[in-house]
Image (tube, each protein chain N blue to C red):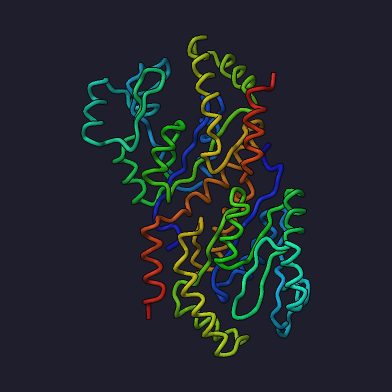
Amino acid sequence: MNKESGAILVLSGPSGAGKSSLINKIIKDIGPTYFSISTTTRAMREGEIDGVDYHFVSEEVFAQDIEAEMFLEYAVVHGNHYGTSLGPVKTALKEGKLVIFDIDVQGNDAVQNRLGDITTSVFITTPTLKELNKRLVNRSTDSDEVIANRLEMAKREVQRISEYDYLIVNDDLDEAAEILVSIAKAARMKIPTLQINEFIQMWEAQA
Amino acid sequence: MNKESGAILVLSGPSGAGKSSLINKIIKDIGPTYFSISTTTRAMREGEIDGVDYHFVSEEVFAQDIEAEMFLEYAVVHGNHYGTSLGPVKTALKEGKLVIFDIDVQGNDAVQNRLGDITTSVFITTPTLKELNKRLVNRSTDSDEVIANRLEMAKREVQRISEYDYLIVNDDLDEAAEILVSIAKAARMKIPTLQINEFIQMWEAQA
């Protein structure tokens, strides 16, 4: 019973809060995982790799995938489409993996509605908005306009922290990583309702 | 923000499922804890110590405590009163401790209603009813009548596993302990709604 099926870990939070650094730091400590790669219609940035950072597709292909119900969730952010393909997620769950999503508040909402019983959600943020601004400016990857957009989106997202199971304030990376490891290990133990119902029937019946 | 306040871990499951053994095995690995000691009107059994296993009180004292609203929850089980005093729990939470409750399904329900935002709940059971029967007979502490009562209660409780965040099937004690350690460490990170609201206000305002 224990550990026989996969589960989902949703990570949300502003770009610049350090989600990627945190994931890279803990990935070897939390057992078999599948990191869900989103599909997007936005332009590839310098240094990004198709199929690693995102699956980069045209608006036409994205529209076809919507039509074919291939997305677990999709949304428009800053004028571009972003979506999560269902197929690889199902496969990873069957293999007993912890599926990690780096998605926004809208995405979390969609995942909770579809797969809430096996999902643990974590909101990761900087200690303050000011600190977020500083980190975004310092990493020098975004234009002033993009940074302004990110800060506005962050303000809206932070308002919805209470929709998450856990909040991690990423002030000290080591401390934040230690917390996330515990949460990720526990997340793996979430058991689907269907499997619980089977267990209940089996528990009493077995002679 | 992280770790500044306590949280609650509820453990439920049939008597004989191994909750006490599990707690004893993990207690040194999960940081500062307060193990909530229930108050009961049932007779003390051989080997039990007042103030360690339970606070043993008369029906009169129990009724006075109900009147004074001193219980987080209380219930009647097998004809005896059992309750959880609120005072020591509040103190332990203020000290940042993980408060562990060994309570039944009714008790979990009451705790969820009062303190759900900082509570993680775990149902611990044997692999089967037959195995539970075997363990209860083997430990030779209960009469046939008491064992029959426990089995009937277990059948009713197992039906409500879906009210819990996690299910642990205690087949292998080491494996079950490893799972419980992860869940307990994550449980400590649950943040009260009130504190999240304060954080949201502070996050944007701080210059």
